[in-house]
Image 1 (cartoon, rainbow, N blue to C red):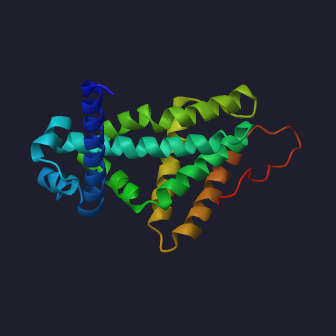
Image 2: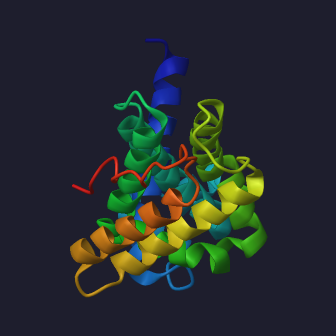
Length: 212
């Protein structure tokens, strides 16, 4: 490996350490209370190193938020591709999102803080870049297979994504998150049942998957 390559590798490792330290501090202390000095100490780097990678605390929070959301989206995609048919892919994706959010208190804390830290409009923009495209693709697959009763419009996608986020946040904050997650999954399944095109005389299908 060249000197330039080693330097790039070191910078990437340092950036990752800063992101991990910041994620923990933001989750525990909150965006307002956590400082760049705190992050630098936790990451065992100088304050100047943090500013080398991130212009300010809001920029750092957004980077943390993006990183955690991208990890979740990757897990959701991995769950979906295990299935060959569109409906099982969609329900598996929703269940994976619920699992990843309900079982990760730190991630839920970041989601709760994001509107105040970044602004509601920036949060919507980030949704447009990360979460919504994956859900839109799943709905487009259903429409292409003739299994969706309505057009897979951006409005429908955003409404379903909002319902999914609310279900995950509510279940995660419940006294019994595991049971609440199951209830949330059933509620989402009921919503999806109204979107599924049924042949005349057909009964509504049983859920394609159950939360693990």
